[in-house]
Amino acid sequence: MTPRKIIIDTDPGQDDAVAILLALASPEEIDVLGITAVAGNVPLALTEKNARIVCELAGKPDTLVFAGCDAPMKRKLVTAEHVHGKTGLDGPQLSAPTMPLQDQHAVDFIIETLRTEPSGTVTLCPIGPLTNIAVAFERAPDIIARVQEIVLMGGAYFEVGNITPTAEFNIYVDPEAAKIVFGAGVPLVVMPLDVTHKALTTKPRIDAFRAMKTPVGDMVAAWTDFFERFDMEKYGSEGAPLHDPCTIAYLIAPHLFAGRHINVEIETESPLTLGMTVADWWRVTDRPANALFIKDIAAEGFFELLATRLARL
Image (cartoon, rainbow, N blue to C red; front, side, top):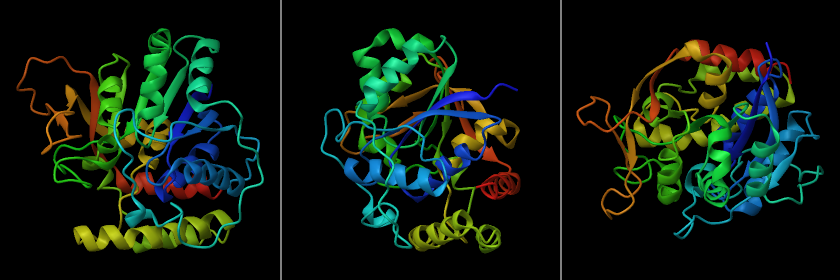
């Protein structure tokens, strides 16, 4: 099997970090061409630093990491330190990375890569706000038709919102960017809160990471211990959702997921529902389907995949 070429666009974030680790631990299926950082969970100076920290933790310091957009396309940046801590990777103290940040801007890297690689061979995996992707599409519309697929974490329908009553964080931070990406016509797979809230870090699942007795296993256990406190208090759940690794797991083991091809539109005007993903789950409109909207996950299989792969690092 030829590994799938991907660009991970990210704003780490503990769950982003686990997604990056899963991708770097799966070279048979995943070829990480580069990691592009965007402002989101924390400001850009921290997200690009965190991406490099994670690559070094994985023992992959040769991974290319690029800094991208430091603010949404038309709005002031909203961050999520209340969930992820002031660094975005709060928990155990982490050393500053020594691997370099690439000089090229992330948007330019995305454009250049899609123009250079054969058409239809590069998948974009955005797991933060969609600013970098949308800016690349606006700046170089010729690349849109060259994208194999976009597999993203963002949005919600049944779970509605986690940063406002109606909006999921990644979409809310830059709804204009999301509108561009969802309207681009690229094959799109969406991992909304509806599925990620079924991927909970229960105690036995965290214990499995700690039982690896490796730096990666210890760190993932500590990260999940830290950020799950917020979601457990908020939702009354037995653990926290591991949102972002669902995107990488889908690329490795799509049989673990199920959803529907439906129309999804992004609200950009209403103060009440700004950033809402208006998902026509019941197909009550005649708007054409533009996304595979995932709703279900085989959670045990997902965590078995995570544990098996992370144990390699």
